[in-house]
Figure 1 (cartoon, rainbow, N blue to C red):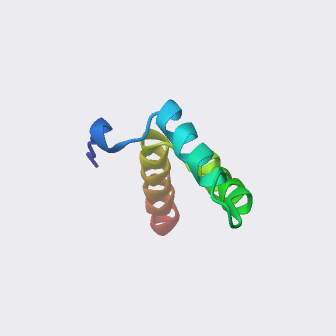
Figure 2 (tube, rainbow, N blue to C red):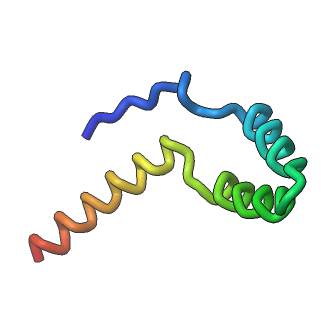
Length: 67
């Protein structure tokens, strides 16, 4: 399984924080939206981590089906 992640489309940590700060400044519920989006941004796996999970899952399922 080969996958290539184009780094040009990923947000840097600095850019992510800038966007979240701007969202937090919105007058209506900006702080709530910032907290929600921050939790998603920080909990989401990096592309490389997601790829490893896919590979490990595929290996696991192949072994389970074989037994």
